[in-house]
Image 1 (cartoon, rainbow, N blue to C red):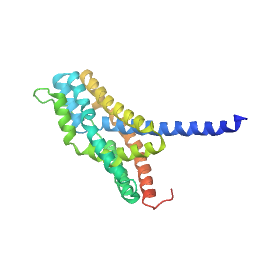
Image 2 (image 1 turned 180 degrees about the vertical axis):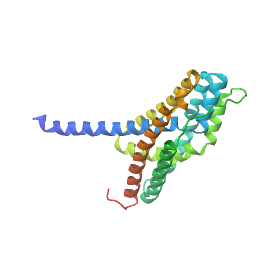
Image 3 (image 1 turned 30 degrees about the vertical axis):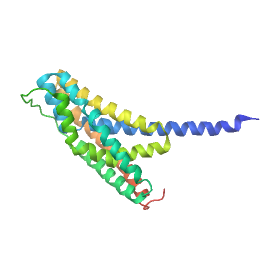
Image 4 (image 1 turned 90 degrees about the vertical axis):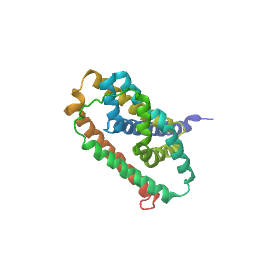
Length: 227
């Protein structure tokens, strides 16, 4: 039997899987990097702990999301998986996610130079970082409206894609904060100069594109656009 007829099909399937992997990888990298570099309570703590107690303490703060977010992700996935048959509800959640990413894009666009103030206190860096991240509403909003819907979407396309997305997201989220702790420990010019602002504006533009794609998916789920 000639197997040549099956070759184009196998090639198309491989290309499709590769595209899906690249989609999850790109989403994880962009969202993780923008979350890691964006000003907020955790980034502020990374900077202040580094200034006062050294880079090692800044590194500890950077690890906080790995501790707090697992519960948030699990709870979000549990809730959304139970709503799998309710497309209009999922569409409303996706719409909220798109609007939230647009807000993140706006925040990136308006980012200015970061100022440095180091409080005088004891390190307890990992404890402080964990507490701040647990009390920060942004991780909850992100995973409920953006992260978990993307995981479920990628899961429907590939078993591996969700792991690629989450791995890339946290590699860039934690890695970017570790990098900033290293920068602050060595030099402050990056965070106070134009390069940081330009990088944030570029990320803001990319986030805006992701937001529009999320809003498109939301309109499809709501029945306002053809699938």
